[in-house]
Image (cartoon, rainbow, N blue to C red; front, side, top):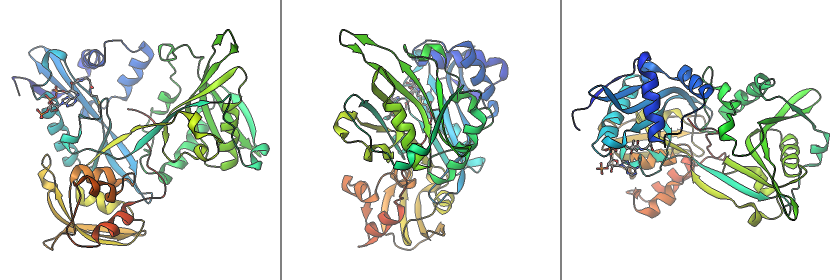
Length: 410
Ligand SMILES: CC(=O)SCCNC(=O)CCNC(=O)[C@H](O)C(C)(C)COP(=O)(O)OP(=O)(O)OC[C@H]1O[C@@H](n2cnc3c(N)ncnc32)[C@H](O)[C@@H]1OP(=O)(O)O
């Protein structure tokens, strides 16, 4: 790296630091309201600035997330964020230096995992991150696609409310869902405000954010936050419903909410972003081809302490396997680990025994939350079976019935 100085972020430097980040992302400033909230949410003791003389030329930081992993344990995970390098200083190793400092700090803090949402998926593999969850987007032609919902959906009452006014009760429901799906995080204090921030410049012609609650017997069973973008052409109305968030563990409430979103008058498209890959609506529609489904990477995950991370999750089938792990960026993880576990718990310790599987830490990150199959990665040649039978047993154990999903960016 060049003569750049890496140090912690001081509160008085925040404006310059954040402006540098905005510039790297295209230079369109956030609204004053967004800026103020991000300032409040910044974890100063976890943030870094790279300085060249009197200028900040690199930014990075992390949040002290607590992440749900298969089996419902909640594991400390550094949520890496705000990564940027000035266009004048790119490709000189500043990101590499910041990632070194960040991951050493995460290890020292005893956090077994680091996670991030990438601006571009090609950046982080070299630092040992694997794609641990994927997410769906869809553009549903609601003028053609019909939805079959459970009959109990008719007993669910829908009520429109101001999103901010009902935020607390929605958040209580959200909190209950964290352990049930790998990849979710507990909300840090203040983060709920991001859910209803709704700055005008991000609306792209759509209405302000609206919220509909699904209730039965006075109990909240689900909610959806959405907006409507009206549009007309010579043939009439063809507006779009834009879904921001939807949570409804109860199938009747889930069905009632999706039916509502697909049947709003004067609209013919439902636009959905960042949904779990196993979202049940895909099995309720009569024409998946007209739903414009697309897949992309979601959460990128790195095992910072491989032993602690592997012992923290549960396994769908009994497993007893020696893993030969290669970790060039965090060499303390390299070597052989014996993983023994099942649905009730696991342990993972150093061993000299012969390995059953060999893989890079990046691929361990990709399978950690249950999204990607070890067997699929064996097909790429990156996961190697060294003992016959080890691959099938480990692949079954690492799989999980609920797909991992991170519902929001950071
Ligand atoms: C979690 C988040 O915050 S994601 C946000 C990431 N930030 C952005 O996308 C903003 C715009 N981009 C940038 O600010 C910068 O280009 C960064 C941060 C992505 C990269 O910073 P740099 O200091 O240029 O990276 P650095 O020089 O350390 O590169 C390290 C390696 O990554 C590679 N690399 C860097 N950026 C990219 C990229 N966008 N795509 C693919 N490879 C990349 C480099 O080629 C280099 O490879 P090498 O080790 O084989 O030589």
